[in-house]
Length: 351
Image (tube, rainbow, N blue to C red; front, side, top):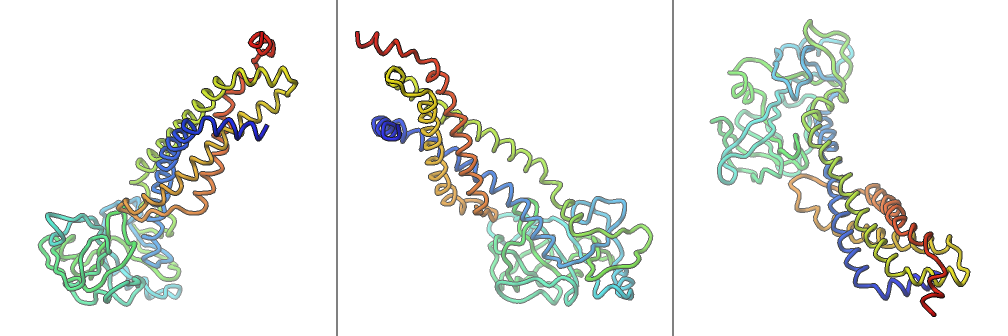
């Protein structure tokens, strides 16, 4: 039966190639949508880990420091440093804005400002950390170069360093400032901050403030992307259905072409189980070939995305496993015709 299956696929290689290509395109899109969704989730983890904090101190009536604009006095940091369980405490200001001087018009950025030599210690790819007012470190996706001057809310900033992979909100690149600059831009020069990040464990916080874990802060940052990630999940499911429909159509057309062959095989005593297995195997072969080509195509298309998208080995394995399942389900469409095939037709055709 295996030899007959191979010969059948050779005979219909054009249809098979077209089906594999169509399946590959759909599965490549499915893979990239899943990788894009995962990249959004990984981005929030990287952003929270960037601060290096064990705890975050923020207003207790807000969702978190990323999505709420309820500043707290920077003096809270000094009070926290006096506690035995706190090794260091750094006030940070976090907000979204747009800069000029990079290309034409405005460039959206995620602004993070902090006091140097504290909890926040960025790892730079080029240059040095901002240690003076008027200096900034930018993510490489901004396109700004060291020594270049950019403008944030009318404030000139000189780029002194470049980091990689620091973004928020689905690919918005980050820039790092001295907290004095951020306070002048966002808080009218008042000694305020979005939160205080703590290295260690705070025993007590002032009234009106609460301690948040990195996981809670990550949920706050991830929440605005919930609609996008949910939509990507739905699209991914729909594409799996389309892929199954393509493989299923191929299996159905193949069963039509092989109707006479099936009746002859049944007349010769070949069991229905072996015939059914042949139909299922053909569906699995088409799906796996499509998944393999789709995987290669997806990896080739990854650089086109404006956010760090990585196709992991786990995602590739899931794609291949699901392709086998889809191939078996789609191949089952042709099983009914196999089971209903009447061996008497074979003799009628010969007569």
